[in-house]
Image (cartoon, rainbow, N blue to C red; front, side, top):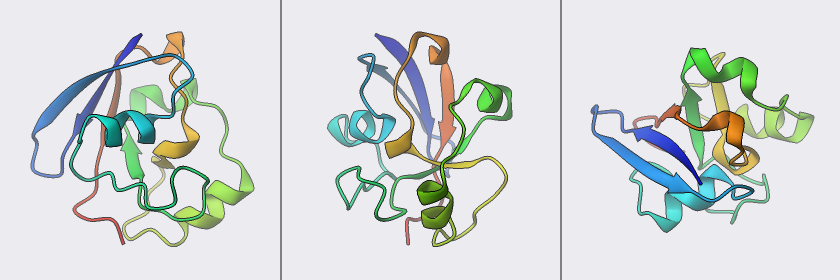
Length: 106
């Protein structure tokens, strides 16, 4: 298990224990984390699990693939630290990861 901190746009924090191999979208939805919708069920076909990765963690993530990049183009407020939580899998090197949710998922 790893710990992931999800921070809502209003600053509310929620720490979730995530089993290795589980997507961070699945973990958020299973734990009722506000701001993560996951409408497509985690198949990278929408952008409703858009998150902002704390800069200190960006280099530890797997590189973004072209489908994720295309879906993020649909996300309002995309930034250099934007990722889709469905494409991020819990792994030991991500223990303590901090993700911020946008004001809304559109």
